[in-house]
Amino acid sequence: MTRLILSACLLAVLAGADRVSASQDQAEVVAAAPTDPYAKNACVQCHSDLPGRSSEIVELEWKHSVHFTANVGCDGCHGGDASVRPEQFGSAEALKRAAHLQRSPEFLTMRQSRDSFVSAASGRSVSYFCGKCHAQIKEKHLGSPHGDFGDPTCLYCHGQGSHKITDATPQIIDPRGRAEAGRCSPCHAASTMEVVRQIKTTLIETEQRIAETTETYSELEGWGYRNLELEELSHHAKEVSSKLRQIFHSFNMREINNFAAEVQEVSDQAKATYELITHLQSVRRNQTIVGVLAVGLLLSFACVLVYYKHSFLDPLHG
Ligand code: HEC
Ligand code: HEC
Ligand code: HEC
Ligand code: HEC
Ligand code: HEC
Image (cartoon, rainbow, N blue to C red; front, side, top):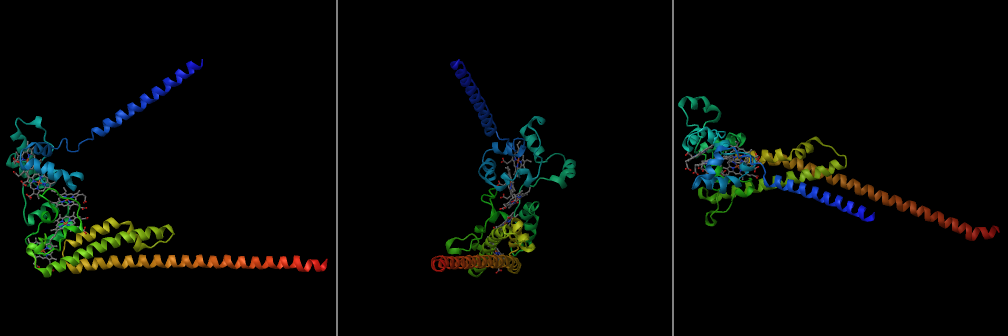
């Protein structure tokens, strides 16, 4: 009987283990085949198979860029029709012409406004090219001292091999001089590099202030404190940083400094409030300690009285 129960248990355990390994298998299958968002993107599929520069752009540059992660394919920037399927065309050449929108002139006129194909860009046209999606930055860049020629272009600062655009950081701003082969120095004298250094410092400090204020305010909120201006900055820290970065592209010191000063004002307010509240808390804590000490003192005084009564007065009465 016991043996029967034992073997039943063993079977149950084995069945359980089986189920576990089955679900693990399933998990592995899911992990092994993540759906490739570019599987049906004709541009990516054809260009990754082309020899030379094309596959280099796909494999070594674009796949390591923020745009790959953000689902911006070749067609996002260059336009064209990424939805064409190989089986719809007799030859690779026909497929390519369709994708590049090199169909009939009438077709191009029809489609031009929506997704015309742009193959290359330089100077100011790079700003328009990228500005399709980064509109505010385009405006600031074209209005900056660099906007007249569009040089340095968006790609001079952001691209490594033109397509490997990664997260933007203040490190792009390089205040090193010509002797040290600084990236910004080829067109600039040492006096401008001093301005460059200032801009970089302002950017880094302001971003730090935004982060610190967010942290301070969340602590203040934990204590029940509310303030509209602080809330605006802390709850929308990402947008505020973004605004700062957009303004930076104007290279207008007055505009940059004004924005930095606004942030500093709010950040100082957060600091002052934090200090005031922690001061009040410590005063209250000290008051409590003094209170407890006073009560303790009174109690011990009372004890002494009782003791005195018991040991001296009572025997007298007795
Ligand atoms: C069937 C293959 C094929 C497809 C699909 C395709 N291309 Fe191309 N593309 C080519 C070839 C071939 C060239 C010539 C350059 C080369 O050999 O690398 C080219 C060149 C280009 C160029 C360089 C400029 C030019 O006009 O020569 C760009 C930019 C480009 N393609 C973007 C795209 C985009 C965007 C898509 C999708 C909308 C796309 N391609 C779809 C094959 C293709
Ligand atoms: C973020 C926008 C952006 C995306 C995404 C993008 N390109 Fe480009 N591409 C550009 C710009 C700007 C130029 C022109 C400046 C240059 O040549 O550096 C260019 C130039 C090119 C050229 C011709 C110049 C050269 O270097 O040979 C080819 C070919 C090309 N792109 C292919 C592609 C393919 C294929 C994809 C998708 C894997 C792609 N691009 C995705 C912006 C983009
Ligand atoms: C089709 C729309 C589109 C085009 C065109 C485009 N981008 Fe983007 N870009 C995006 C998206 C979406 C993101 C990711 C979300 C974000 O950070 O804004 C991004 C992110 C970036 C970032 C990183 C931002 C960060 O937060 O650090 C940089 C830098 C950038 N793009 C530069 C460029 C440049 C330079 C060009 C032109 C060569 C360009 N982009 C063209 C859509 C686009
Ligand atoms: C002179 C160099 C330079 C040029 C030119 C330039 N950028 Fe930037 N860009 C930067 C730096 C530096 C940052 C990051 C600033 C920071 O992190 O504080 C940045 C940030 C960005 C961001 C991130 C914004 C955000 O909201 O976080 C995007 C997107 C971007 N640039 C796109 C562009 C586009 C598009 C162009 C062309 C119209 C361009 N940049 C031209 C240097 C440049
Ligand atoms: C292709 C040449 C070129 C490159 C590269 C270049 N600039 Fe400029 N820059 C100019 C021109 C042209 C002007 C406008 C004339 C002037 O003020 O010198 C200018 C103006 C400036 C100004 C305003 C000057 C002032 O005294 O107010 C600053 C700041 C600046 N650039 C910063 C940078 C930074 C930062 C970089 C590197 C990311 C850079 N530049 C790269 C060409 C360039």
